[in-house]
Length: 325
Length: 43
Image 1: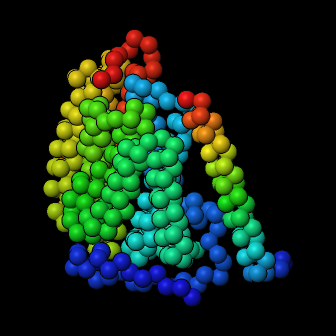
Image 2: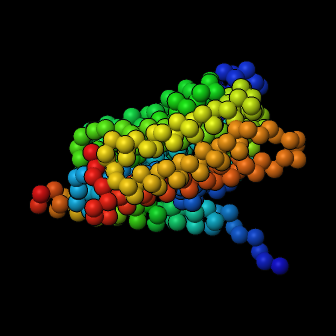
Image 3: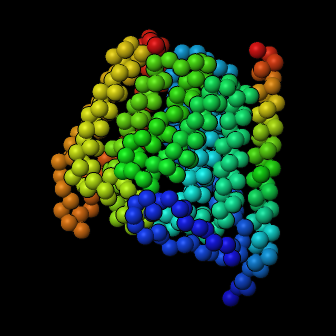
């Protein structure tokens, strides 16, 4: 029998009793599917997509083999960071309905395997990026992994309701890494792309947190709706959506993109703001409230990011559509 | 009524599948390193 111990910081920092320990029989070794699940494949698809868009939108071109390698490294780094996140949060995941079936809380994998898998993938991705692509891209990848696995997961998430705001930087790195992999240097455009995802993250996660807040409260994670309350969270979602609208238009305003991106960003961010207004101005009506506007905003926020970055690449690849800075 | 699967047999199946997945991943990396070397040498 193996026990998964509680992360020492999470509930202590929140002043809430620690979740019960996960104690499971490991009659079978973890399967390859469990290792695959440990990488959070859904999140990786978004990471890979934004990284690829950063790479394709860059003004310089690299060989397709090197481009594939860069994207693979970004995916491996994200997978490693996700595995380390789940290793650290196994007990918290066990206490939440949404995450209780993950390999660690469900008892299908031991913690040491998860940790070693995460460290191996993380180190391997940085090394391969450095050797095959360049050490600047590798350094940014290393920072992004450290940011997610340590700064966000271990330090910020259990301590402050601003965890999503500051931790959002971790998810904002992929287009920056993709761009640097293609060009070898940092310029204004990839920093703006970073800023767009940075501003997108709070309304995206807080919309989710609004309809799963009882889960977060149960395990002592100080998410904004739990600590500051629903009303404050709704106002902040609205504020970030407004800032996101302005930020998303910066690439077009500075002449980094053409009309395809500019019009797409205005429409997509406008709809994002409208959905955020619906969420921002309403109040939960009771326990039977289905939280439909919040769920719609969360679902749209994912579509939004895919569509916005698709427009960015289309703007770059369609001849005569625009010029990149 | 079917017989329950022997846990030892099931354990070996899981390990064999894991080994296959690992071998595929490693083979993929070897091919990728070969291609990267070709691209770098020609550049």
